Length: 259
Image (tube, rainbow, N blue to C red; front, top):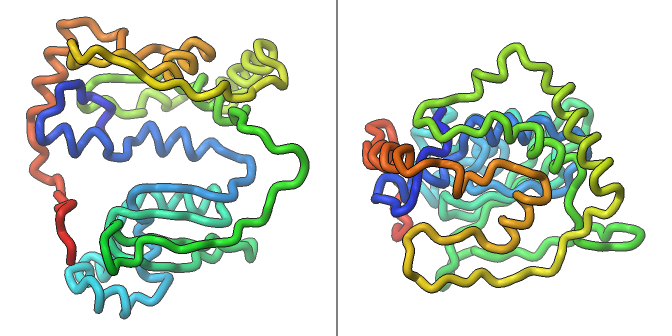
């Protein structure tokens, strides 16, 4: 899998590849051990199309039939996350059709899946769900476990075109996660409340916009590598040239398709 190699200004290929799911993201998410209520993903896990009303889905989207038969509709990497994280709800989009399914787990729990259509007239792009309310005091705070995962994996951040997370081979992930968690607990204690939102500003004089206040504060808070600034001009030029190389295996989905 590819690392995040794209840099602004994006060409047409990079505009699509920049939001592709990366191996690093799957690795990080797979480290979560605490319960999750809701998981959001742009693409569907490949298993979901066969766990709902598949015939109705094919009637709406006949072009999906072959991919469903080959178990290729969606992202196969997300299946392991459904199995590992077992969220109560999983919401997706991307395929421009409303579809629901239930993913059963071996411990008798289940994940309820829902995808919605594009926001257009006479399309099924909205559904109201009732989510049980949390008990106790509610506040908007960072999650300690995710902060530790983000801090621990920061050392493996790469801008190389084909750099994968093979570098993790032989590394005890549990150890580096424990070290990161201890660092955060000592530095912040229980105070992980998110500060009020601030608007980003720019005079428009540069294509390379400064990071928004939230990103800047977050990077400084965890002493993370600021990927918007650490790359030298020489590396930036090199990586921008890489981003112009199209991927012959890339599947393009027309966002203007209203079928």
